[in-house]
Image 1: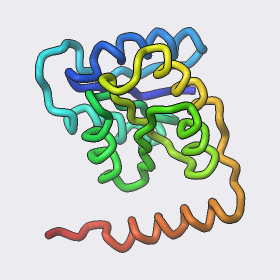
Image 2 (image 1 turned 45 degrees about the horizontal axis):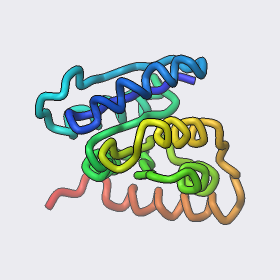
Image 3 (image 1 turned 120 degrees about the vertical axis):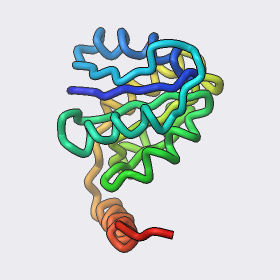
Image 4 (image 1 turned 180 degrees about the vertical axis):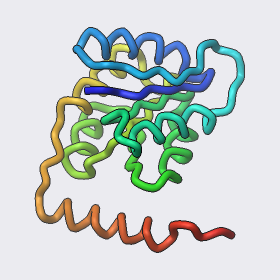
Length: 153
């Protein structure tokens, strides 16, 4: 699977752990940065990952910042992205099984590298159940997305 990954300065160190882990699992990785722990803006890395996912150039995306919150907010502004902020193994499984998420957000300051690797592995290995109730709910989310697409405040 091709995975796009991006991090701001708060997630840089964890990204440097996750990238080789993804490669060891046999995935192809597109790393959009950042490449240091100097202060940068998380939206500048969330958008390229989301663009790769929505264009089909990557099958999934992973975003990492200090808490994962900023990255998940930015990612979920992109039409077609279903990003989940995950800090535990159960949520990693449930967000794929029930919500068919295509982007994962993790907080480096919230989870350690070992747990983060397990979250990534479970998230990548869990298929969407495709159950009727879950598909119906996702269709409702898409309707909301369609309703507000292009609106400005």
